Amino acid sequence: MIAFWVVAGVLTAAAAGLILARAAGAARQGAAQDPTPVVYRRQLAEIDELADRGLLAENERKSAHAEAARRLLAAAEKPGEAWDAGSASRRPVLIAALLAPAAALALYFAVGAPGLPDQPFAKRLSQWTEADPRTLAPPELAAVLQRVTRERPDPEGFRYLAIVEGAAQNPAGAVRAMRRAVDLAPQRADLWEMLGEALVFEGGGEVTPQARQAFAEALKRDPASVAARFHLARVEVVSGDRAAGVAAWRALLADLPADDPRREALQGAIAEAQGAPAAPAIGGDQLAAVQGMVEGLAQRLRDNPGDEDDWIRLVRSYAVLGDAKRRDDALTQAKARFSGRRDVVERLEAAARTEPMKR
Image (cartoon, rainbow, N blue to C red; front, side, top):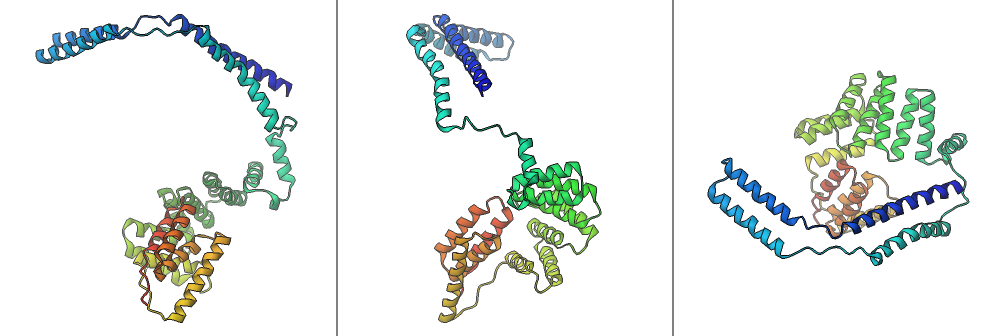
């Protein structure tokens, strides 16, 4: 700690010396000649040179010459004010240079922790390695897995590292980990599938060309790959071939088991691609029941934010009920929450455009 403050003091003194040296140099040059007339005289010479070379017409030369001469006369009639850099002007600079380190030291002792020992990263990493993984935050667990995969490169290790990097909101790290995984086991379709999903995550929800290539590799190795089929079909929908994309989604939906939780999201994507139909008319008792379920969903999302499908369902429900204010409020909250997911934002906006039901 003493060494730190000695070094800090030396650096502060050096900085203060530089400030004062510059101030003294400026004081010595305070009465220097105003360079403005010199600039305008050079402009006059350049105008004449251009005219002599035939690059400037005679009338243009006269006009430019007159304007430059006018500015030269105006500058000559208004002498510049010499900067006064006497002792009174330098005193505040000296005071500030002396007070800054003292104020910094006082602030450090007031709100800092001078008695806290050093915490080198290697020591903390060793502690995280010995700790229960369930007690570690995602960035800490990622650091542990990075050490493990460096020592023992393994596809599964990199796969787990990618999952943790994603939880730590580090999509670039997840992509790096999955690239290492597919390098070690290029025959595994699930690793190519995860690489594609990591690239989509890194691209903010967009299926980039690199992601399409990864999904295509996954599909070569496993024609039943759900994620690869879904995202490649979405590329067709987004690129304008909506019919082909929806047909691929319907084929995927037919292949999914009846109890597969992904069916609902897939059905929602198909409905949005085709344009959600208007809801049928319902009676008063049914309307009250629907409103109660929607309010229950809204309350659940207030207590627990949930995932994108819940928010899309809430926005669509308010749209179906014709409650424009709550629909817009829910849409604003959801778009703020999923601002980095372009695909989710597009689905939210499509849900908000759902036609209200007939009453």
